Amino acid sequence: MPHSKVVTTERLWWKECNVYQIYPASFLDTNGDGIGDLRGIIEKLDYLQELGVYKSPQVDMGYDISDYKDIDPIYGTLKDADDLIAELGKRDMKLMMDLVVNHTSDQHPWFLESRSSRENPKRDWYFWKKGRVDEKGNQLPPTNWSRTLDTSKSAWEWDEKTGEYYLSIFSAGQPDLNWENTDVREAVHDIIRFWLDRGVRGYRMDVIDHISKDQSFQDAEQKIPGQYCQPGEAFFANGPRLTEYLQEIRKVLNEYDTITVGEMPFINDEDEIIRTVGLQGPLNMVFLFQLLNVDNQPGRTKWSYSEWDATDMKRIHERTQRLMIDRDGWNAIFCENHDSPRSLTRFGDDSDEWRDYAAKMLCTKHCTLGGTSYIYQGQELGMRNLPAHWQPSEYKDVESQSYWKFASAEFVNKHRKIEYARKMMELKARDHTRSPMQWDASPNAGFCKAGVQPWMRVNDDYPRINVRDQSESDHSVLAHWKNCLKLRSANKDVFIYGGFEILDPNNRDVVAYTRFSKHETWVTVTNFTGKHLLYSGIGDIEVEWVLGNYPLNVHKRGESLNLRPWEGIIGNEVIPN
Ligand code: GLC
Image (cartoon, rainbow, N blue to C red):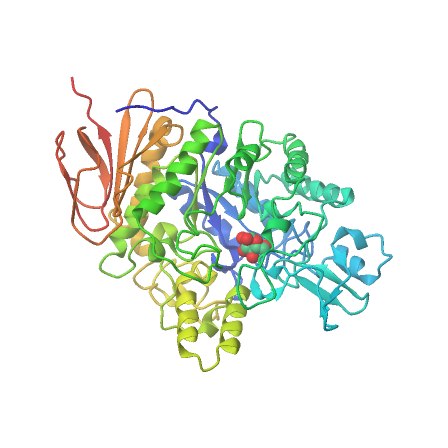
């Protein structure tokens, strides 16, 4: 095999750990209110330990925080958080928290002060601006930027009392903090220290590419026809002071031993990525979204669909894997989170016939890519999107509800558009990954007691897809995850630190690549179709298959592979004597 560069990066714990992302509201309810809580997480730590992961709860469901130094009572108390950290410690696990500091809640005392008068000392902690007036005398917001969670609306909210608009990119309840103000940055540093001093070992930094904004506040380019509000990320994300702000945070983090991942939806430029996660970069790694956006129509919002195939997926992996190897950065590997639909439905086949195979195939790919691995709760079971027949009222997310309201109002009697909107919700809504975790086949899937109304409806398939069932079988999706994670940990030089080379880039059905260290080469082959294929992309080498989702075939040098539907296999190159 021609070997390109093998990673020479330093071996560090945060590169080798497996992160498990918990959405606390839907994990486990222990106090009978139908909403998951911290005690529920503590109760399931052994389950996570067995899976072989560290964990990462988010402690705020709404991403609109009104007190950064306390736990929302619906989830528990500060003591519960301390207990959680202690219980994790006993199992050699660590807690990574969400840090949501691009914006606060509109109920946060800082914002309440800020909006109380134009003269208030905290006025400048947020972005307050006067409106504009058009030629017809209509009042307009300061810029034409749209709201992320409700793209038909303006990102600026009018405040009657003080006669100005405030910037709130996500929703009116989430005003953006003004990071240009040094006091704001110091207040954030103080929050970062607060949780690290309590024993938290790292942060997922929510929309951290939004914290520096272009201060010229210009109108965004007209991209979406027929509406005033336009996506403004060219101005409100990746601003000129982003690296400076992140380096300030890095100085604080350097007092501790942490893991950090930046959620950066709008970072794409390679130099910018390396500036952020390269050797001198302020963050350990970032979530890059090219894979999760693969089925969006270019230039449209997420509520759109375009066909994709294995060549798109290979292009995306090739670029990020190679970038980090060639320029000493570090990847975060993920294909599902609380803002996405279920990966099985989206990238595989969730039918009863094939779901098991497809979920294992996706796991095979996930576990053999380089970087730190992030698993989202339920992914290890092959949980699926919500059933297509559910009414939109079952979708609880503010983003889905705003979209549905908009689609229903705008397109009244326009049947096809409504149908399209429904289809998009079925495919793309964030609700699909937010339904309660499926622990067993008892009522409410064991997420909360029978008779309690869970905050969100449990997916109807829980009697067939749940932890209890899968724990009892050596052939379940869960068992496959455990095996693949074990293989990954046992071969760190290859799967975590090794080189990467894509195979057969133009094949539209199969994603295959090699991973290698100085001493050995491994091959991953994943069939992204429900068809039998004859695959010749691995070339003139002999591979001994080690782990797969079917009984393993024997492969001889120079032979093509018979790939079965949704097959995913990992093997070791046999070196000729
Ligand atoms: C991030 C979160 C998402 C939230 C948004 C605003 O994208 O992951 O859930 O709605 O930021 O905080």
